[in-house]
Image (cartoon, rainbow, N blue to C red; front, side, top):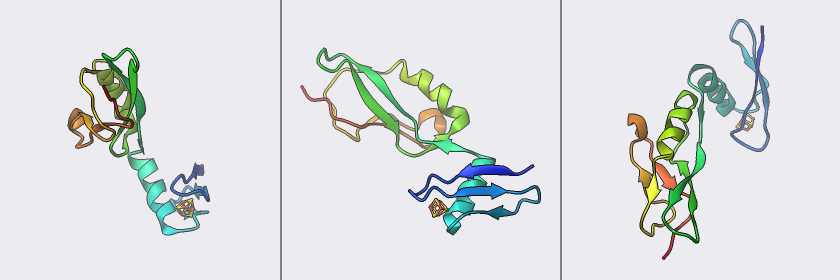
Amino acid sequence: MNKEFICILCPRGCRITVDESGKISGNFCARGIKYVQTEMSEPKRTLTSTVRTVFEEMPRVSVKTSEPILKEKIFEVMSLLDDVLIEKPMSMGDKVLINVLGTGIDIVLTRSIMK
Ligand code: SF4
């Protein structure tokens, strides 16, 4: 049975098919092949979420993974984010968690928290 993917690496959004023999078609460029191979073996996503702060004017602040993370790890990372409480002003890009779950990937702020 064929498997279908939409490549999300650029706005073209190629619909890529992998047939039963493993032949890949529908990709406009080579990046699509790599994308599909990764999706089939170890799919990854950038995780975006929020964490709590002590600041009344901004009780939650948005964060994301510094790189795409294995999909299978996402719920575990979300659970770790529940325990994060930011208690001091920080800047966009600052690390909230480092090397989360030993993946080498950090959780970073996507906006600043000022006094
Ligand atoms: S296969 Fe290439 S052209 Fe098509 S969506 Fe992916 S990156 Fe873009």
